[in-house]
Amino acid sequence: MPKETFNLISDEKRARVLDQAAKLFAERGLNQTDMAELAARAGVAKGSLYNYFKSKDELYFHVCRHALARSREAVYGGIDPGWDIFQQVEHIFRSGVAFALEHPEYVSLYLNISSAGMERFAQKISRSVEKYTANHLKRQIKKSIKQGLVRPDLDVNLTAFLINSVYIIFMVSLVSPHFKIRMAEYLDIKGALDGESIEDRLTRTINLIHGFLKPGHGQQPVPAPTPRATRQRRK
Image (cartoon, rainbow, N blue to C red; front, side, top):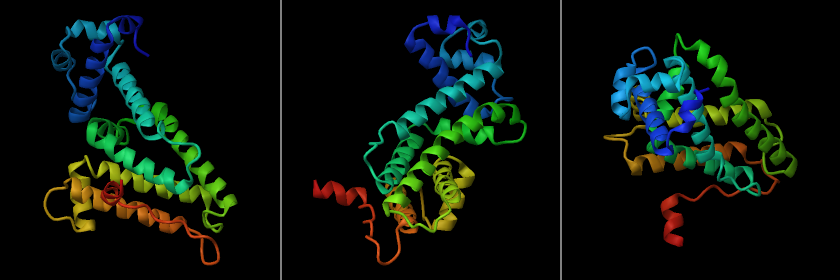
């Protein structure tokens, strides 16, 4: 937790410190981030950072917690409880892509926590990150099976894990140079990963997940999502 002095500064200054810290940690990693450079970027004195946080580790931990809260609100905050699992999956993926493109530093922080030497942070952060999304998906899959919307032969836990794993890979492929190359090779993307190519692969990914979840013959089929461009033309 930050010191009380951090909560006493203006909202604008607090946001500036956290935003610049997230970007520098994402760019350099924890060990290579220099507090003096961070202070300069944030427009505060280096000593002020230590008035706000006991150490660089404490600042990093708080930045990651802040990133988690913003990401969760952006992706899950807009979910209508009345939506079925197909609508929720589409919303999660589309909101996740929008957030990743707007705040790539937060995706990089997620990757950074998974790297070697970051185990102390993984123990504090990873379980809370993954538990929320895992529980949400498992609840929706169980509910949808009971409603006859999803195949009854699916392993609920494994299905939730696979959906979220596809989600994570898609998000990091928008940010990480390595994963961008990987996505381009697997999905045969020529040239830059632009808005059109992202939209095309995103829609196809959502359709694939929907197709995997759909019940078999004899049960009411669930329509696949309509690409955004088509939806906009219909409005």
